[in-house]
Length: 137
Image (cartoon, rainbow, N blue to C red; front, side, top):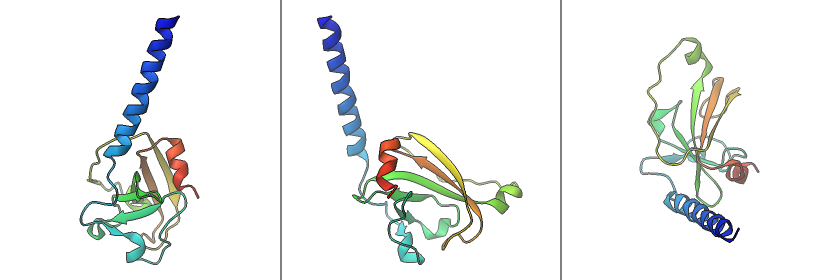
């Protein structure tokens, strides 16, 4: 029984250290060449459900858009794929991403400043559901 408690304690400590290491590896702020979307088009700086978005303007409309929480931690990578392009079976060669990926959300959007046409958001979450909640409000 004592050995099992020690193993459980060691496993818990390892999980905490691993989670801290992943969070520590997440750089604050976007890479060079990315611009804050709210500086490019008329949208709020922080978008509930997505966070603060950055994009390289030459990759519009698909992206990738890099999303950050209010403390500057990257939470997701987002692609915005026009419905028309899907219907036309357009091929997309999207920039890859590295690092931790927890889950993916895909949902329809009618259009908004910056990507005015109807499109799908493909959100690759680098955080778990609790981390996703950091940008929900």
